[in-house]
Length: 143
Image (cartoon, rainbow, N blue to C red):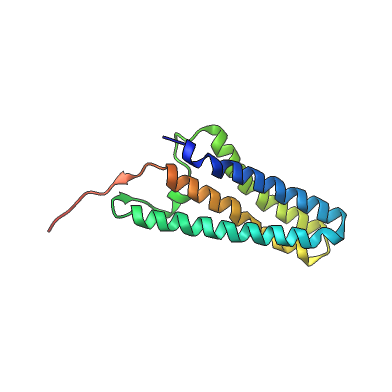
């Protein structure tokens, strides 16, 4: 499996998670920074949706020749390096849990936008899975 072409997704997911947490912590300390947290959350949401849509489009294209299920876009292949699994699944978990914790500790409703940011990690995970996954070939059946 050649992971070099998708290493940017791993870095992007990790950097995005760090940025999300940093802005969330700063916004929870300094309320004037909440708008930055909202902008970061909505930007991450938008990028995540685009990554997820692109991964889905690639899976539809590949599905003519390979058997690809929805879970194949979330569950990383068995031979995925542990470091990759840790970063991609870890980013998703940290973003979901972090957004819930930040929202529950604040009275401002601006922190509710944080849960949307988790689509960023999910989109990165989807793209990495479709780019690096090996799927069962379809058999050609005629009449």
